[in-house]
Amino acid sequence: AFNFFSNIEHESYGVIDVGNYLSFVYLDSNHTVPVTAQTAWLDTTLASRSDRHVFPYWHVSPYPTYYSWAETQATRNNWTPLMTQHGIKLVGSGHEHVHLVTKKVTADSLDANGVVYTGQGHGMGNNTRGIRIDENEWYVDFISIEEKGFDIIEFRTNGEVHLNKVNLQGDTMYSVTL
Image (cartoon, rainbow, N blue to C red; front, side, top):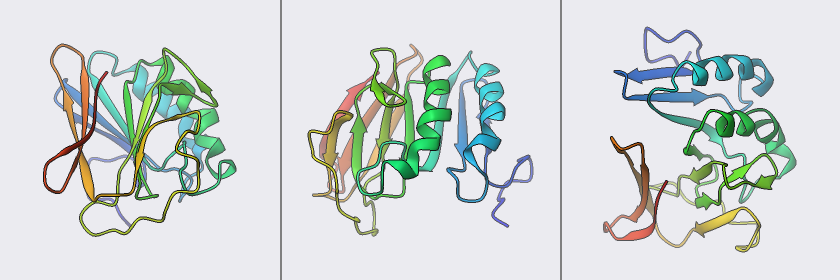
């Protein structure tokens, strides 16, 4: 029903390779396919792309700012360990319309070898749902609903990933290189 690409195997999750430099892995965070039904596929997909940048993205953040912690437990338990295991540096999500950047995390813990998760803000017209967590929550590095904006992500040839959250005037709200 929502498959826009003719070469995609699954309707709601898959991978788009940009040559052998970058792969976009998009996942269904329990909307139409259970998280557990995608986990083996995800492990195989990440393992077969260890020679490039990989940017996974799914709709509902594993580290919520508005919705319940329990609602996102399946992605934290099943997918975040795979992200760390396969050396993923940055994972994107949306749903809550909050600018969020986590510390390096895996599952329910801080992890020096973990992954940074970025939540897309209330970009070009979407209104925020608000924030129901403390700004000092253990996993939060940056959080804001003050300005509309977007993420600029650079996948550099030296292996680094650079995240720049900017407002609609182009001013940097947050920046990190991983």
